[in-house]
Length: 438
Ligand SMILES: Cc1ncc(COP(=O)(O)O)c(C=O)c1O
Image 1: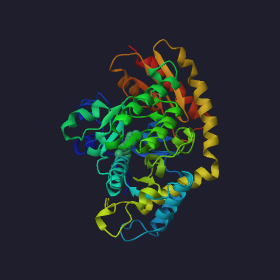
Image 2 (image 1 turned 180 degrees about the vertical axis):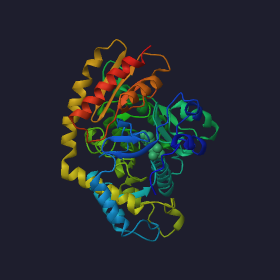
Image 3 (image 1 turned 60 degrees about the horizontal axis):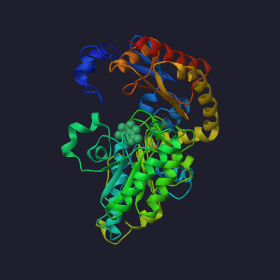
Image 4 (image 1 turned 90 degrees about the horizontal axis):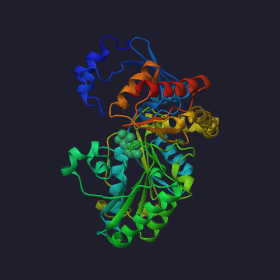
């Protein structure tokens, strides 16, 4: 079947309900809807053969470009063997190999991997596992979850309960179980990143001292609160949070759905703090941007609390596509690229280059807090509420796909940009800023 090109956008607007979108903005043409027919490397091509550099890795999932030949070849091979089998009562090679390799990459202590399909389902699983662990361990009062101001962990009802972004959360407030929102270590909130880390940790300590008996877990996005506007913090916060969670017997859930897989410069973000979480949530880059897949890794002590003669003490959670063979195979192909190409070292050079091209923006009178961690770059812009949409359109006109979060412009490109693409991305960022300012 040839790719559908005729009236793609019109038919999409008539038949699809697009995610994270006020459909009227597309309906009135205020926001363009791109009809994409193919992808190649960092580029997306629309029905008119216009091209766009994917500056945000298609919602932070794509690592090695679109239609990557090595991942495509692995998937073709997998298609001829096994596309999917349920993971209850059955197992298969890609799921097992991926669990083993993820555990090794996480340092070897998170040896039990539970698969799901999307990021939000990984969050749900970590929360449920923590709660159920305490119950199975004779501590049924430990039911409460702690999360951070401005944090984001997904949109399903359980994940939204530990998300603190009003635009996503407020409409559903009555549906959500109350969680405790604690201060964020966002480096912008104090004179130095370390001071911000210490202040947030003090608030965590005060809360835990009073409430540890009823607290199951703290969930954090290590190093960068992405959906909250690329708010970055010092690794010291993670060290302090880990120590406090240990002292007060509270689980630490690291949600690395957005920041895992090299995004912050190390393979996993928490590794920059030299700590280990009790639960590690992964998705997005896990399958290099190919197929929906998520995983929660946890340690033996958690697994053992569920290992029992009684069925109901087991973790009975399930999703039909859990551990899909194609998705796991794409993930393994992605890990092969990481191992074979020394991707983290190449990214250090790429990030240095992007950083130096963006550096002059720090002196722009409307730009605040130009910041970078690994392959994430961001700055805030002093402008009116329409800035983000104007910037998005201006960038498209310059062949670059960027979608600011509020007035925060960010770049999160795939790990394959060459010098010319880096130049275009940074040039378009600067020009779009000027074009979008009133
Ligand atoms: C930190 C974090 N957690 C969870 C999620 C939810 O993932 P998904 O959109 O795959 O459900 C996201 C998505 O942006 C995220 O950034």
